[in-house]
Image (cartoon, rainbow, N blue to C red; front, side):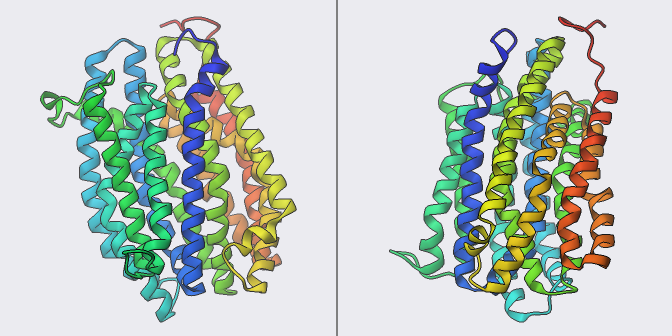
Length: 445
């Protein structure tokens, strides 16, 4: 991590994660495609459940980022005992998180759905899906912590294989369990939830099997399992801001749903479809960010400021290329993308308009996501949170409300690119103030 040329090293770390994230994005699209075949009400229900489902994933990934950053920094600084300690505490705390999130999500899902719809079919579909998929919250939290542990030690191919195994299992089971193919009964939307949960279990089992049969540079040790305040604070100091970074879209979507539902549930559905589609871009870019985090954390801990700068610049360029590709696709064939999820001409037309407007902010968003990911990798959780607050709350929500007063639902779509443009400028300022890199070579004390 410290001596190999930056670009080939970054590609070797990021490419497995880009592939796995692309497969994960494909799963999101395929899952929604099959659910949309049940009915429009089922797709609307999936869109309404998404914010809570996203929050559970955000909690797991955010805490995992804290574990990842700590392990990479300790290994870079040559502190093996602390690296093992961080990994052990991370697994223990992720189990606790999963238990708490399971209980809370099942308690609030009913009232949450009723805030946005009074439709009996939509409520029925939403509750049926949520009660099953939220039951796998423990598996989600533990498997993602293991993912970040493997990534912290450079085992990106293991993460790729585990994530692909889970996603492909989900994709294969979706039509079987939804429509009753082969030996499976037709479970409808409950089948979609069960397929998702089984895929998550496959991913967790994969990680555990590899850990047992092929040792990695850090170990889970029983003697380090007792909770310890200083290490927990270190994990949460990055994990909580990272969790909030990832959870903020759930808050944003919930507020946006409230704004859009004043006109029609069609726009709520369009927003849900957009978020399924944009995962293909942002999860792919996130694969590059995941490859960057352990590299930038290790080199930051080792004092290699020159390599930190090179890593940052090259990741920024790679993310911008991905976003440019997404912009072209959304401008050229937006109606075809929306028609994957709805055959209603009104929904297709509204969704195509939304994609054409929103995609104007794709390329510039690469600045924010690269700055945020780099800050997390270097253990600077709070500055990263400031960037995400601007992207998802402080800028976009007031803009959406104000623009919608003048432009109707289209105003919500224009708020996306406006927020990305303003947030990119803020990101540069926040990054420069938070990270003071000395000249080439090792940083001074």
